[in-house]
Length: 460
Image (cartoon, rainbow, N blue to C red; front, side, top):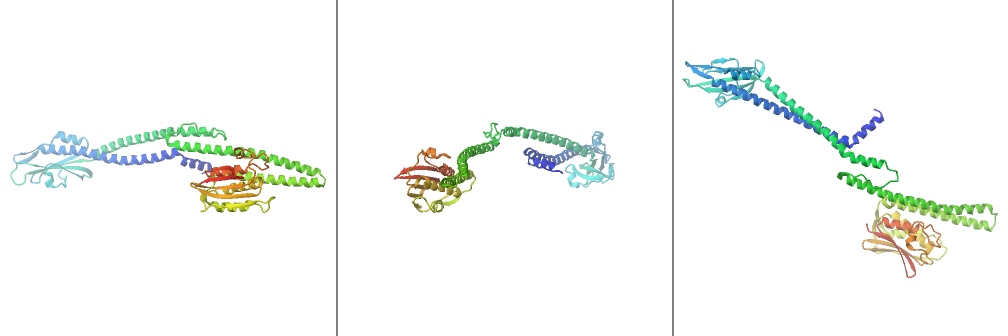
């Protein structure tokens, strides 16, 4: 068996239509076999009852034609009754008078019926006569004869071929009806399954005919049974569309933002190449270093932003101690040396707030807020505070800088920068993405000469 055949067999095993039809075929086959046995049993019983009535009636008619003449038991066999029985099978009978003498019929025809029971009515039994299976009817009739024993015994036997033939005929007819009904039921089911799967085929064709970027909801009307499935697919495509839009916008913005420092770096390198060794060359090298650092920082923040977007729905959450997280981020985010003297403080919450979240994303968000405050805000003071409120917690970064030179709503957009800012414009955007991923928000305020950026997080 080649791999193509194996693949087709595997697809058939996974086919919903094939599974339904296979299960129904097994059920119908089992039911047909059971019904066939039931039909055979019922047919055999019906044939036996029908022929037993004829046999009993024949025995009664023979008994009614027995009389006493001259003190001797005499029988006048009813020709019609015997002819009726003989029309279907071989018939044998005998009549035994009260003395035990066979006055008519076959001497060797024997019945095992109880003499007491046959006096009450016809007794039927199975037997063998002349090597043939027979059905035997025994009956006793009391005659007016002198003496204590005045009972005459009548025994009638009939071969069973006719009743077997009748049972066979009835069984075959019943099995034929069962087979036809089973085939019709199977065909109807196959048609019904095909008809029921047509909406799925329409949905399949609609999705297959779409362009890769067409993530609109499915237009085909689904059956009630798969409506939730289609709604789940629509919801998934909507989330995928939103994620793709974010990533496309991010890639476009990133490409635009990276071109600027690269162009500036290229220009500085060209100046450096054409400049002789002098003070100007040292200044050019310094600018190249600054541009390289700027480009490295931008690349790092671009990667951080992409990571935050990816982890927004994919990362598993775990219990996070915000005091410990803020303390460790602050220790790593503050460089060993700063161009100016800055007083840095950390104010933890008591008791420490614990909530479910993505520790990696939270570190990136807080690290960017602290870095922004040190680079573009704080003159001499920076304070990181952790707080706990009902239903959530917050981390605040405050500095004594001059505040923002552009509206906060503008600065929260990716790559948006203040008028005099030389940053990448991604720090606040990263923090906003992380806040939204934790069902929280990012708020900016200014009071007591301090600019405060608060990362609010929900307890979920």
